[in-house]
Length: 193
Image 1 (tube, rainbow, N blue to C red):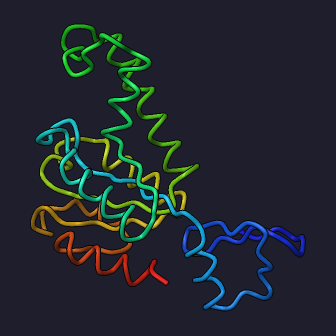
Image 2 (image 1 turned 60 degrees about the vertical axis):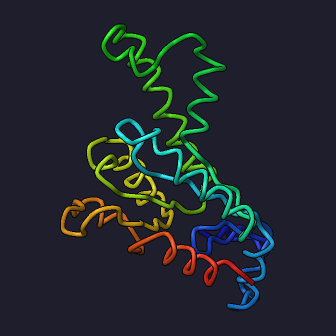
């Protein structure tokens, strides 16, 4: 996306480069500009049906992304906990599905909106851990679809056999990795200077 002014906002690899002169940027210049910016990674994957709500792999990736790439990760597990404690204190969101459907639906809609806006407005790319918990739930599929529509790269780590991953999900991803080690190698190569 480029505007007609000489100083514009150019989108490169899903990243908007504010104030860049697009007519003078070379490949090395683009990599340098990207490296000077703080990129934001959305950590997508199973929560509702995952062990510990999928927090364990996310905590490890948050630490690695900050330390190794100086990227700012968005952890929806931590964000949801913070949201529920501050906006809906005293409500047991998981139990409300059975005991107070009206409240549950209200909160679920708020979380869907918050997470979707995070992807659309603030995230530069998504890391998705796709396993049985992600397959059983719906949020991960929705997040990947939003990312695809808004041009955010999606890097998927398989937590199950490839033939069990739905074609819809595969249609949303840019790269598929067998494990987090492969993903980390790729990210270091792509985003390190």
